[in-house]
Amino acid sequence: MKCLQLPSIHFYPLIHVHSTWLENYAFGYDLIHFLRPKTVVELGVFWGGSFFVFCQAVKASGSPTICHAVDTWEGDSQAGKLDESTFLEFQKNRETHFADISQVKRMRFEQALDSFPDESIDLLHIDGFHTYEAVKHDYETWLPKVAKGGIILFHDVKVVNEEQNFGVKRFWEELKKDKLHFEMNNQFGLGVLYKGTALPPENEFLRTIFQGTPEELEEIDQYYLFMKERLISRAYIQMYYRSEEKVKQLEARLLDLETKIRNKEWNKKAS
Image (cartoon, rainbow, N blue to C red; front, side, top):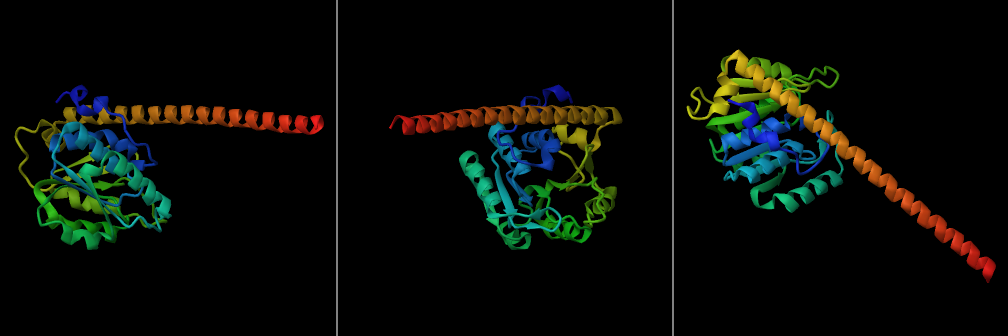
């Protein structure tokens, strides 16, 4: 597989939100293109960083996909509490750009289970409460809903945070031992699990990430590290220019106010 021919080589996110998933954006974009799922479910959405990447890839690839966002948008003790503005901003972005290919289920994960028949989900992203018990529970309760040949993503499989009782890493290490899996080599880590034993023979992308040679895996690892750095660099550039524009706006506003003040004082003297 030639990495420079992957769809993500031309990718840049349409929607910019705070997200530790940014380092996985390019991979998520490619995964949608090559998996072409009918149903995507994300458990734990927050600002929507990964969710909007999935949606953008669906639009770009023409995949017959509906993406489902499942969250209470209340936050938790690990990630912090969320106020209503987070959900409203998410909804505004979703409805503006992806209303036709996405649905929102504002509820707890267990409450959404009955919305999906068994073996109906092609891509499941687990990114909720990060204790060992919570991640294990999410995986075990949602696994029957994942189709054969489907993929399950686990965010933060490299994070060690004993103070907040993070347990994704421990659960992932136990789970992946006897299953087809792939792991993104970056700061927070992304575990990619395949439900099944037989890969589609014509899907070179899936074959590479799950059964690639050491040389192929090294190449794809370096490619996504490069893509991460490119996206982060462009994000900082965007922030810089937005800040510069904001400064210009404030300076113009200040000049306008000073002019009005001077004119008002002059008018008083003239009267």
